[in-house]
Length: 202
Image 1: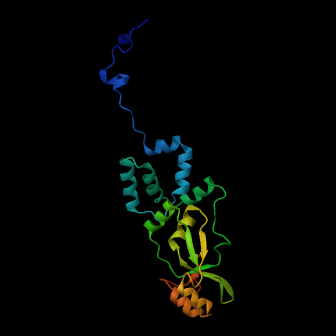
Image 2 (image 1 turned 135 degrees about the horizontal axis):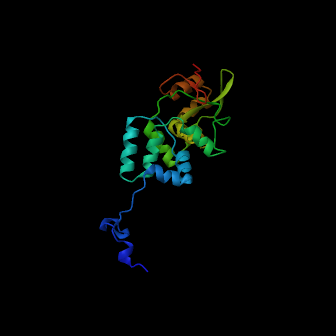
Image 3 (image 1 turned 90 degrees about the vertical axis):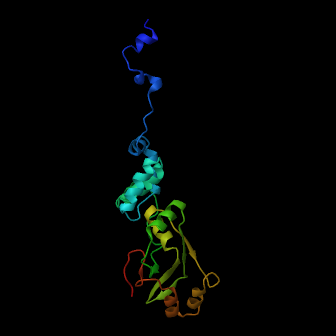
């Protein structure tokens, strides 16, 4: 029976099992070996706007071992991820009747704010009561544009909170029937449009 020295005869000292350094698995290997982790990351961390900063942040995070953060930044570079997320997480919310009457005059969205809303799972959206505008029942988004965008991108249902005059002074104008004054007070930065399809109203 061969002895221990015979078994390892001819090997360099650095080749002996006790001297081998464990290899660090790369982010890609980690995700491929753990499909559940990959699915979760894709589903939970969907892109907002890809840019050079996201690429740098992704590599930097991975280099420091922050794999979840690296995945979030990397997925921000891939505009097709939301559709993949939809395939991997069946039954997720898709914008429909619950938001079809929402209108807004805010176009500006900050990428980092939306990403933070996704991470924090903050999908609260404050809206006005329904009112008639040119023969159509609509509700105006009062607060939560970033949260609504985060809900859409991460395929989570938003929490719609209908405000009253007690919650928001602008609603008082609406309750008095002063629709023009209400719309003027609620105006943000662009033409009024339907949120669900971005069709301009006026």
